[in-house]
Amino acid sequence: MPDVLLQKEIKPRRVTTLNHTIARGLSDPARIRILELLSHKPMNAEEIAKSLGNGGVKKATTTIRHHLDMLKEAGLIEPARIIEVRGAVTKYYSATLRVFDCQPPPDLDGKSSRLIEDVSGKLFKILKSLYEDKRFLALDKDAKCREFLALEIVNGALAAAMGRQEYREVATQKK
Image 1 (cartoon, helix red, strand yellow):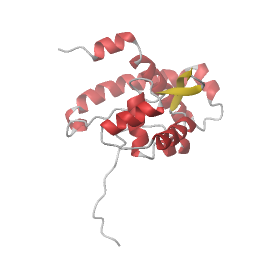
Image 2 (cartoon, one colour):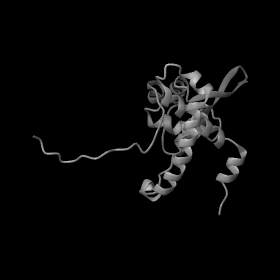
Image 3 (tube, rainbow, N blue to C red):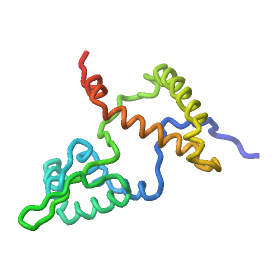
Image 4 (cartoon, rainbow, N blue to C red):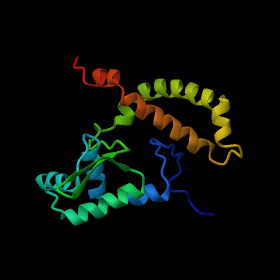
């Protein structure tokens, strides 16, 4: 009989909804940096190349265009504006996914465990009401993707809430 050297229950600490197309779009660090840039303002390939270069990441504009194609294919960016100047078309893109380039404080989970517990109780109530909503039940009649769909809806609601002017005012308040 083997000796057990380690055994413990591992609970997820983060939830992210991905499919293979999105994962492929996020598979390059430069694309993640591009998403972070585009989450602040629409930019074209030349502006992205310049901004990345200013941050020490040198990429040719043709390489940036390839990354933009991959991100667009994954649904992570969309054209926000297309302009024509002297017959040349320039596309400005915006991110459909918010990316935060931040380092959390050490032991965030431990230091915020009570807050996580409080918020999880509130989120449970939201998820419970979502699972009981007829509109939600109509989305996944055979219940194969119920958790994925619930998380996508909660993610969409979170993104919409963070896009509100009231949220920006609260998030930028200094105490």
